[in-house]
Length: 560
Figure 1 (cartoon, rainbow, N blue to C red):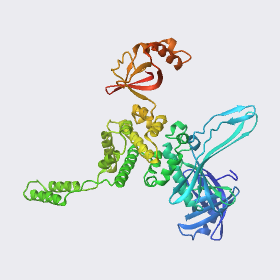
Figure 2: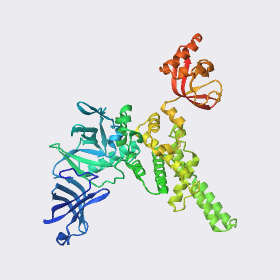
Figure 3: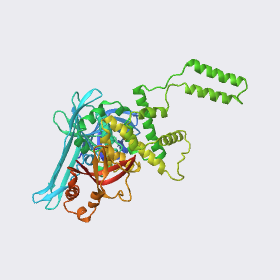
Figure 4: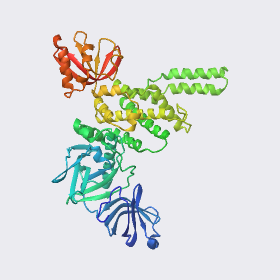
């Protein structure tokens, strides 16, 4: 690992020499995954530091080794060990205003997994690379953020190639030089941003500082919890990909909203913890509920939602009445009287409870999204019950004995609701959110048992065609293809043409090599005497009559 960078996933143990309080010391610099980096003072030198106080602060410590120099910054000394907050490879004596972040899973998220091809000239790759570069304001400071992609292909011999490929995010501060604490804050901000979009935890892999004068890159280390080095295996495991943001032209809107809205500082970073949680299902469930509760409280605060206030005279009269009843012996004991008084006082409070705040927040969610997620009142009651049981240390009672299947469906459904709320704040439309939902193959999306029909309607991948008569499902089962429907402009409905539909079922029509063109031609010939001029094939459609909808693949719409 000689002369290599020190990254956030680096694992090393090397001998170093350093000087502390003008004392020459030796030790071992240890950096390991998910363990805080430290320098352990050599046992031969412990006598030299025995008088140092616990927690002794060391602003900067320069270490020399056979692998190069390291600068340890903001260190604390404890019992023969030195714990740095930052480690810079080499000397740290320069100003910088630009950092470059590498993250696990970033190339997959950008959909840069295109194949290579081998020709007589060597190995090649069609990158299809797209680039964004946008300015954002964060905590009153302006930054320019852009993505970078590098790929080096070296021909080792006739059939062996060394491919070095990397995606990264560059952040340049336009107003000032950056500090290491700024770097840590910005790194966390970008990590949460990309993790929310992918609905997976994308941990940091590397951080580089760019010397303002020379342009030279220097690697920086600070502690980062890395749950997995392969957070996403395929781009379809991401809820939303970088490629989708490019195709929809969403980069500028999404980044502006993310860095401008306070909720992405106060509230939504908690999603990263949900994506990485590996504890018991009860506490996992509770973390989802707490986040929803906080969201509903934030909406109540922003919209000024309060309950109607009571007349204090009415409350006083009710309390006086309860005391008189107790004095007259109406109650068996004072406990009944006290409970009644507590009930009246609670009813007089203006602050809404969780249920009332949830109802208020859901007023701002469209009905089609509610249908899509299918999160019912019973689901909310179950969620609230589990939260109360866990918070009070009670045993959580599941709906089915010895099974948590019912609860897991509701938890995953709740996660989809939370994702809708955060994507709505990022600036996604309902159609764009549904498109992300339809292409994502993560387990929680499948397990949420969402309404596929509503997803298809929102994505506009399916048409709903009103018909004038009920469908005979024995003649037209859902697997039947190429049904012909004719539009009636007077009633604004369609009617199935049985004769033309039967014609499209013959083997000579279905298996013709010309495909849809041959089907359209056959239908046109069969209806040639009726003066129809428009023939369109809808790949997916619902035929709807009197509130009942039947799904079909390949429906031919005919009109004049």
